[in-house]
Image 1 (spheres, one colour):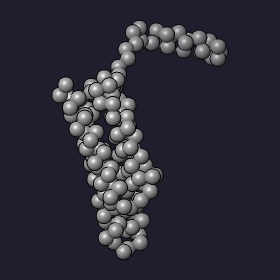
Image 2 (cartoon, helix red, strand yellow; image 1 turned 180 degrees about the vertical axis):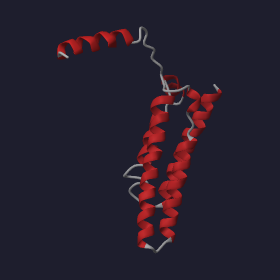
Image 3 (cartoon, helix red, strand yellow; image 1 turned 90 degrees about the horizontal axis):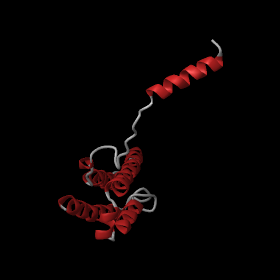
Image 4 (spheres, one colour; image 1 turned 135 degrees about the vertical axis):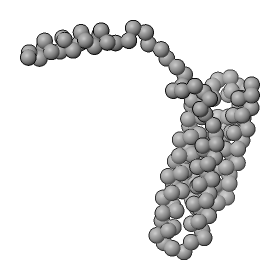
Length: 144
């Protein structure tokens, strides 16, 4: 088959199968799916990995604890970013002007300068406290 004939046929078929109307949504699924509990659970795992690290003298175990802690720290950041970018909208930021700062501080606490870069349980506690502040605002916006 001639390549140009094939190309024209494919193009004609694509245009017939293309949607006539394109819809855009502000999120992938209805907004009822968001919950800061996901970030909190991962942050609790980070803290537990740090505590187990501190309690062990086994070098291999400590290495695994650090790997888990770093993986879970990354998941904390992911869940926070989803809330920050997908759930919270301009009216929320107007009503709660501290939100951007809270998210910035929380994601940094879950990053290299925070729980990914240390085994200090106090840093995990600070992260959990920030997540709790975000959670309180989140649930207040759900009631509104």
